[in-house]
Length: 302
Length: 235
Image (tube, rainbow over all chains, first blue to last red; front, side, top):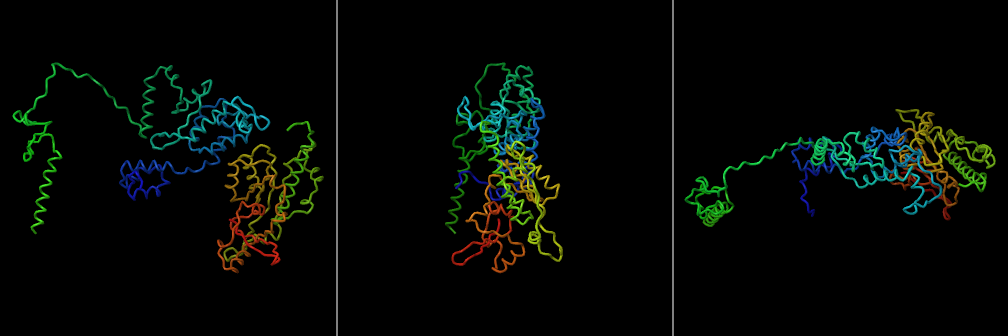
């Protein structure tokens, strides 16, 4: 037995059927009368489906003559970051291979020719490395940057991407030493870099930035962007010293005040109207049990 | 790698390996039923060296490509039976193009696409690319995606050093035509799936360029029966 409560047969059947129609799944589900929770569950399930392979054209685009300039232009960066989340880790390694076939550095944002160490192994500071692996890149820094993306694809963390409610792999570029990528990447809209927070502080428009971040956070949490609700907190004016609360007549009257325990009057079974703070469970039981008794008595007689 | 040994030595080894691959690929093309001249198949090493090496003795792969037309027997074998709707069917085979890839690093999409385009533009029905190094994963994909139009095959030079069909433990494989296949199934009252199978990636299946659904007859020598034949369906 599964420990989690499984949904009824009907929704689980529709999981398989609607596997191909991911984007308009929620609206279809509304028509079938599923709850919002079930709909989101289905949506989450559809995310786990096998993705179609990356078309060969994408590989060509990202390998031959890419990036067009050095350092890469913001458009190149945004193009790469828009395509890469669909890649599986092995496909990313294929891309590195493909770039190496054209004798360029394996890191997709570097247009330098790759290294060409002779021999089978080479002594590095970290130990002995295969030249085959070293020759995939133009420099150690590019190797780090390239594998930084690979790690993110291998252990993906997902983020919501706007109105459609689609989740995709969150990718960040490794920060450059000269931090020129930071600038370029910020220009590529909507993509932030980790470790770039201190730069933003310098800019001064802190409040604006925070608002933008909050909006993004809302999108990430809910899948929909919510306008910020303005909350103003004001102090309550107190003019006179506080006094102990007293029973008003509506709460049972001053005459019965000594009989009340936490708003209930003890021993007032018949008089429901006097019970002020709603129905208690005790009362329900009291009403219910005698009726059963009477019925059982009746059955006994007949 | 190093020039201490003299460049001639190193190139000699490469050239002789290439010559063996050249001979095997010619034998393969001839075994499939294409027309090739005897002196082309059995070219001696000296003549090969004279023809296909540069001044310094290094092989020149780019001029080693050749094409071959199917023989009359092959055309007959690959022509489907005439039907009322199609009384004069076209044969399912055509000129083959064989190319040796001069690429020394690994082979990517661009090289593969160029080869496929060349085959398509010159309306070759089949293309064989002989490479010195392995294909990249995506290049392999290009090969399979476009194989509906022209049948593209790839062989590595090191796989062609020896002609496997000449080995004494490899029995004769004969490709059956559609007609012969139907006769076989009828004779033994079999469905296609009831035949034993051979994989498409089997070395012999690759050598003969078998396609899915084709049947080969395997003739083995037997101590008791002299010869016995079995059949395999390519899957």
